[in-house]
Length: 432
Image (cartoon, rainbow, N blue to C red):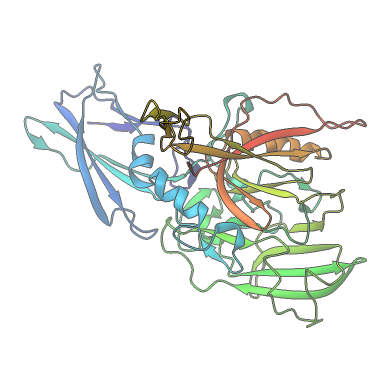
């Protein structure tokens, strides 16, 4: 028997985007006659991905080469349930995700490892091949974009890489965000120092070994305050390997800053805050993020939309236009309880209703608007429309939602205003 895997696009034990309809294929090129293939699925650690066997199942082959396949999406859904992921993003299992003030593992990704055997006449062969699948939940490539499932530019193992899991482009030597002082946000970064895997010649994932994040506040080009967050423990498995890093100015309000101990993101002057991961004594692991103070017009209470981007991690847009709250209770129904009673004087007892309003559920939504999005933010808005998990912050409170706007005509920004309007619907019922 000459066993061979056929899968090409994800023939790797490195992290891959998980929403693609991806099949793991294999065959026997020696044209042996077998009854079936036996597949065993495991979960484990970086050091031993085959630590715990979870299930066994049989797969039929076809053709003279006994070609067979399994849909890896089936095992993504087995491992990471929609409800648990929604609980994580909306804060039912921890503090609401965008409000983090320390480094926190993102526990919504689990891996699966497979061993494949042949079965002939009831006899199971020795192991013929193995495959490790480390998907990023909700990471995706839209077919017209013609992208790849693997993301080496987001492995933080070099000071020249993007590293941070955002679709915002690198501008010369940094990734730019624009945020107001009250904005809350986190950005995600992979920590893989315990995963020994050469994803390219001379490049190993264990060099994604950052153990601290440096913050620097700049005013007029000068560093005026600094702070460092340290990683307590390097992850031992894919579950928890992506780390959420405080990004919003409001997340940093409790930091104890050096250089100027009185510095505060809410009350002090600053132009931008630079954020960069590194390892003590070993330099930096990626290009920095710069959070610039958002100076766009703001006349009303703004709304901040968090959504899961195409990489499978949090992204943000800020809407400064007037927010309109909408309540939809159109599903309410009534039922008749009496035709009505009259008194002896021939008048109706108006206090006794003829109909009762039945219990029902309504919906609440917010209409958002922004006139001054950049081209980058307009591109990100397209990802917000396709995101399965969103939250909106309005008047200081985060609420789970989804973008209910069903269509959007995309235009690049120009000299004239190109307003963006959308509606987000809360993922909670109004009890009527």
